[in-house]
Image 1 (tube, rainbow, N blue to C red):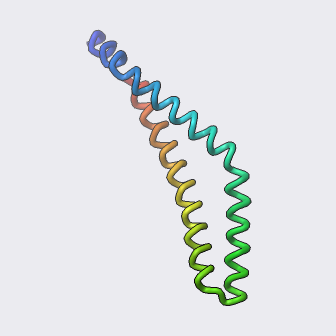
Image 2: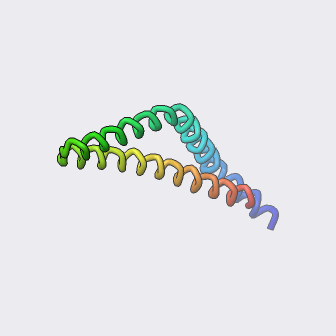
Image 3: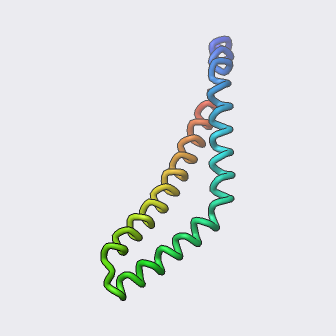
Length: 94
C-alpha cells in the first residue's frame, strides 16, 4: 500500500505543481487589480445613477452589463481560487 501511495504522489506531482502556480498567479492578480476593480465599480455605479437621473436608458443598460461583468469575473476568480485550494488539499492528503 505504501508503494502505491508513493507511486500516486509521483504521478500527481506535475498536477500539484501546476495547481500551486495557478493559485499563486490568481492571488497575485487579485492583489494587483483590487484597487482598479474597486475604482471601476465606483465609476460604474456613479454612471448608473447619472443615467437614471437623466433618463438615458441605453447607456444605463450598458453600464449595468459592465458592472455585472466586472463582478462576475471577480466571482469566477475567487471560485477558481477556492477550487484549486481544495484540490491541492486533496492531493496533499494522498
